[in-house]
Image (tube, rainbow, N blue to C red; front, side, top):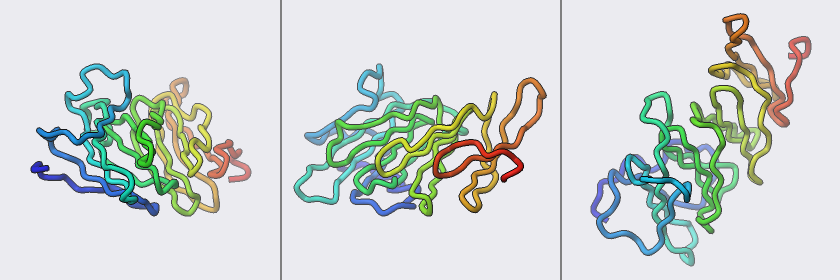
Length: 196
């Protein structure tokens, strides 16, 4: 391929068994294996994130992952992340987040937040957190570990993670102010302020 690759990996927080290049444009000669995420997207190529993925195993052919663009907004992240599962890659395109099994690329999960606003790796807890406007979803080696209850009417901020407790702020529409919250990192369950 003759296209100049962008940085190959944004956040290598977890061990991984694949190599990936973000391509500046769709290659003129497409590789034999190509996958579009999500499958039902219309006009997915317009602004899509094009990633050439090479699984570590020489028995598995490289493939092109075309990930639909969510939003053309600087607040919506784009890039690649490693995950708690070393065979899996997280590709984010304008806040649309796709977790792709590099050994079987037809298997993928699209995170339900539209958009994901922040991706927060927690290697010590073997979790990758996805922060949306209203909640947080945690992804572990076996898939979704937990999804929090509604934490905010518009905008979630993680402030600290200490001693297994995630602290943050969420904006409350009724009071028109940011309200603190605390979650158990392992389960996503709320912790009352008396215990946090």
